[in-house]
Length: 340
Image 1 (cartoon, rainbow, N blue to C red):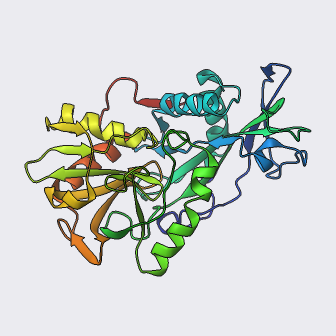
Image 2 (image 1 turned 180 degrees about the horizontal axis):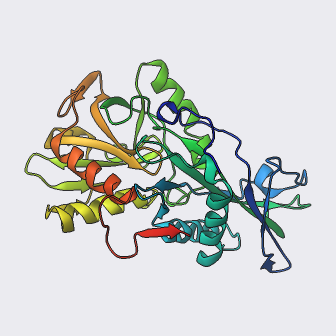
């Protein structure tokens, strides 16, 4: 089979219909076996809880082509675990880890021609999701659910790839204290659309969200997690029950501490003390690592390492992480799942 006729090096992070997607239905207390389908349209009841009460969640992970031609997933078990935690939070049935990974495997294999070849900086992005469906109207959990996985080839999330971009601090809150900030539910993202639009119109890549209780501590960077490298070389990420636990962030924490023998900390990152950082960045499945050139706050742009050049620590973390993801570097045990 030949690869799809695409310019792999110029892909955007945007939707593209591919050949197959996986779908499974939950009813009467159990998931069915699931199957691959070609139709990218879903037909659901007008009473679906996903439409009215936001009973839905999603994940994001990538399939990577290796130099030897094989395809691998990066820590899909962690995506499965995070989806299970989100399902628990909004009273949806869990998707077992084995079923989650098998669905991803099936979708990657069926869409082999859409997996970007090695060496183009592109990946196959997988979007698993669970939605509450069926004939409902009261504010209560649905009695039926759909689990699906679809995919598309993508390029960098932020235009330009691994180059520093600037962000501005938002006055809006991404999540509420004791809310669903740590769950990957769509409502968190719907609420971020307006702040993102404001930031983009002002000339910034996205916005920085502060903690909703005090508006003094950095929590997230748009739809990604925040990290900073202090001037004494410590890798720091914020800690808060409102932050989505990024698989990329925790992978970087591990690499910083165990591979590069850096001191690591999960702690409060006060916006008024950002001058403690020599380098900062946003990280996540889509963003991978995006260096932050500067943060605009209270009428001033605070610049870190550079607005044009990637900092040395950020660069070595990026090289280590992507080396593992593309199969060029051996990762810790259990991080790589080969799609056979």
